[in-house]
Length: 254
Ligand code: CDP
Image (cartoon, rainbow, N blue to C red; front, side, top):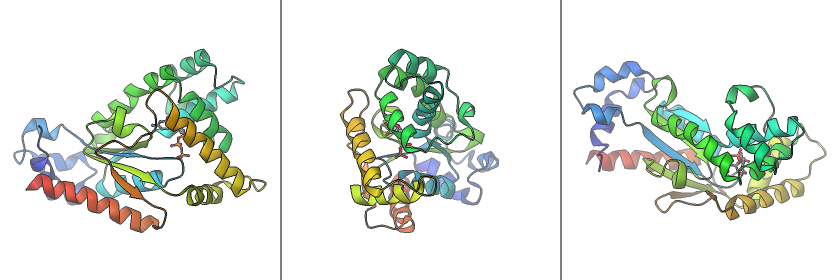
């Protein structure tokens, strides 16, 4: 088993300079070369609007890691299909769109709408779409952009399928009512006609589809830490996540 102990010692030495590859020379000599090349991967999975995206961003910022919102890939593919007037359930069209997909293609587009969310979970159930997006996600984790020494990925299958060997895994959840309220607050400015009951129905339909699909269903990995954010502020959820991550660091150092 690869030990992260020397890596984390180096990480602590380089704490002030986590984002920058400039910190790497400080770590050379502290740890073997093969360990330096192994980035830390933090995986966060969970149902819609559970708070995993907010948490993932805060973790990435704190540790200086790169962040990938994997839902934006499925949302992006769905957005392009809807814009082209194609049916997201059309497997052939969805596969073509997924194979050709790049994040640049949807830059500036509003992919956070409820329609795109619903279509994303339809395209995400198709194995060819998941396969087409898998390499990009794994490459991101293996070689985080801009020389970052770690990557944070959030989604539904990160701890189970995309990065089963992730350094730390979380399954982030919250009660359906709290999740619907949070998502309602995000969407209501653009959609004053939307009710909280509509949002709750959307989330429940999407969660059921995401959990029931045959290929890479939303699931808590056996070794994922369960984080229930129902009664937690963002700060409290972040503090809880940090305790877990720092605990792994300490265990690795012992
Ligand atoms: O932000 P929210 O929690 O509403 O969803 P998202 O993370 O943007 O994901 C949108 C949809 O993409 C989900 O409902 C899933 O169907 C799909 N998805 C997936 O299947 N696997 C992932 N790793 C990420 C998202």
